[in-house]
Structure formats: C-alpha cells, structure tokens
Amino acid sequence: MPASPSASEAVSLARARELDAADPLAFARVRFQLPDGIIYLDGNSLGALPKATPGRLADVVQRQWGEDLITSWNKNGWIEWPHQIAAMLAPMVGADPDELLIADSTSICLFKLIVAAVMARPGRRVILTEAGNFPTDNYIMQGIAALLPETELKIVEREELIGAIGPDIAVVSLTHVDFRGGERLDMQAINAAARTNGALAVWDLSHSAGVVTLDLHLSGCELAVGCGYKYLNGGPGAPAFIYVSAGLQDELQSPLTGWMGHTDPFAFAGDYRAAGGIRKFLTGTPSVLALAALSAGLETFDDIDMQLVEAKTQALTGFFIESVTDLCGIDLSQQDDRCRHGGHVVFPHDHGYAVMRALVDRGVIGDFRAPNLMRFGFAPLYNRFEEAWRAAEILSEILRTKSWQEPRFASRDKVT
Ligand SMILES: *Cc1c(COP(=O)(O)O)cnc(C)c1O
Picture 1 (cartoon, rainbow, N blue to C red):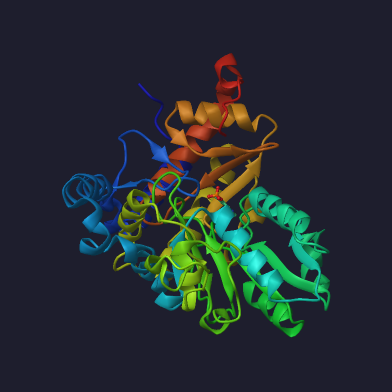
Picture 2: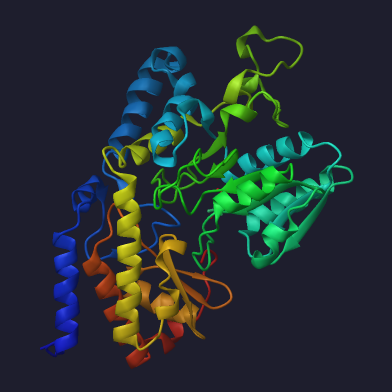
C-alpha cells in the first residue's frame, strides 16, 4: 500500500486538478498523441506528435507523391507551401502573412538574415550578441565574422547589451527567451535602441513562438527567425521560419541566392534576379514532407487565443515552481518572476544529469543542459497542472531515496 499523502500534498494535488478543470485550453490536449504513463516536459525541445500528422504525411506520400507525382507542385500546391504554412503563423506572432516564410533550419535562416542585415549597413563592422545566447546562433555569427571582411563579433553580458548598441553596430542578434534560464529579453527596448542607433536587430524566437505572446509589429521587430519543431510541433528537424518586416523587404538582399528566391525560377535564366517581397529569402527546393508535418503542427493552434497560451504558460511554470519548492525543498521562488519568463523552468543540481535520467526512467521526460541544469518545459496546449505536480512529486522521491545514484543513470547519452 502506498502511504497516504500528507495534508499539504493532497491539497496541492486537489489544487492541480482544480486548475485543470478551470483551464480554458484543456480542450487542446486531444489534438496530440501522448503516450500513456509519460509526463512529457520537453515540448520546448521537441513538440509532441499532433494526432493529425501521421494521416497528413501518409496522404502527402501516398496520394500526392505516389499518384500525382511531379504534378503535385501545381496540383497540390506544393510550391506555395512555404508561404501558405508561414501564413498560419502570422496571427500567432503578430505579423502579416507576407512577412513570413518557412525555410531551411533556424541556423541557416539566421545566417541569411544576419548577413543580409550586415550587408545593408555598409560602413559598420560590428555584430553584437550576448555571451549566454544559444550556441548555434553564436557559432553562426562567428562564421559570418570570419567570412565577411572587416566584420567582427562583439559578445557582451546581458546587462551590457543596450549600452553596447552604438554607431559602430551593424546588427544585434539575440534570442528572445533564453534557452537556459528562460529569461525573456525586452524586445521592444532593444529594438528601439537598435533603431535609434541605426542598427538592425535579428531575433531568434525559437523558445517564444507558440508559448508566449508575440506582437512583432508592436514590439518594433524587423527581422526574426524561429524553430518549427519546439512549441510549433512540426516534428523532428522541422523547417524554421523567417520574418522580414514589410518595410525592410526591398532593402535587404539574401546572401544565399538560389533559384527558389529568383523572380522567375522556371525561366532558367542565366543570371540571378531576386524575387520581390519575402520570397527572395527562399534558396532551394522546399522539403515537402517536412512542410506537411509542420502544417499539422501549426494546426494545433487553430482557434487558440495566444493570450490564453501566455496566461497558461505563466500559470503552469509558476505552479511547478511552487510544487518543487514545497515538495522537494528546493527554493525556486526567486525564479518566479513570471512576466519575464518563457515556458520552461530550469534549476541547477550537482547531479543534474543523473537525476534527470532517473526522472526519465520514472516517466517524467525533461532534459539536461550542461553544466548542471535540469530543464522542464511546459507546452500550454497539452501539459496539465496535475502533470506539473506529479513531476515535482516524483522528483522529490528521487531526491529523497537518492535513486539517481544507480550506476545506470551516470553514463552520458549522445543527445542530452
Ligand atoms: C532550438 C534552437 C535552435 C535550433 O537551430 P537548428 O538550426 O534547428 O538546429 C536555434 N536557436 C535557438 C535559440 C534554439 O532554441
């Protein structure tokens, strides 16, 4: 017989259930295929499988590819998918449909926009970012600085960012919600500082799109990229999105001038001539199967009010922080600065890797980020308050019994 829960635990579980019962987004969970017995807290790294995805892929493979073959580019409209699927994202991020495009990966999209932005600011030499930025972003910037003559990368601490935006800065590129601590940068203030100083800001929205409210127009955002396989549920390796504000589309040129960004790809002309509008930021043939999966991922947001998403993100992360503080005796109260955070909760533990492995073994899937951080992501469309409470409860058991010390939890997997 399991021990009966203490009074405070019972109250917390009861409260979790009350919060679930009152959740205006609870209806969206059935849009996902979630395995029984698993508490999935990693939708910030790989969104769960939408129920519509397998059928969508089967149709594209068997009917469209199998029967319609190459006529699908016209007949099934494949050629328009990078635009049409991007348009689904527009209301979620506060942009116009023709300011968005689905293409490539986040890393490649970032390369395109940062190079385009640097080329649009001749005479300025510096790309500015922060030390804690997502590694691929900073690697891409290091590569750009090595590639473009006279260009250098300046990396400062977060607190120094705004002060560092001066007349020498061509581009400032940052991630809106930090992949480690979850802190949300003040996009509006940084965009304003960039604009005042004649610089361009390029945002990475990978940990923002689909989990917090974004209003790219209102926050003065001109350039952004973001990931398709996290909160947008597009499937492993899903293509990314590119945002270029209408006002910048004529001025900027893509550095990867492939035929899909040509004004008339099927003229097979000798010379490149950029397409108008956002289309010039396409490069090669789109990945049709991946686009199909991403469309099913974005449909999980049909009829979803992003204000409710933001509210649930804050409520879920806040409830998890409280539950961990209460049940595990780890004080996370300082993290609960809700309006500054995205959809994940992160805290250090000396044996974070082994503890996370032990959690996964118990069916609670979060992830680990070097050097010692345990990370728990909350996807407002499918995670429940009860899951947040149970995850904290299981964590408290693992810590109390020290079951994480079992040798099988010590060896590192290739992907953490
Ligand atoms: C996940 C993530 C990426 C991923 O980039 P890929 O090119 O898809 O590998 C980039 N930036 C940030 C901030 C991320 O969180």
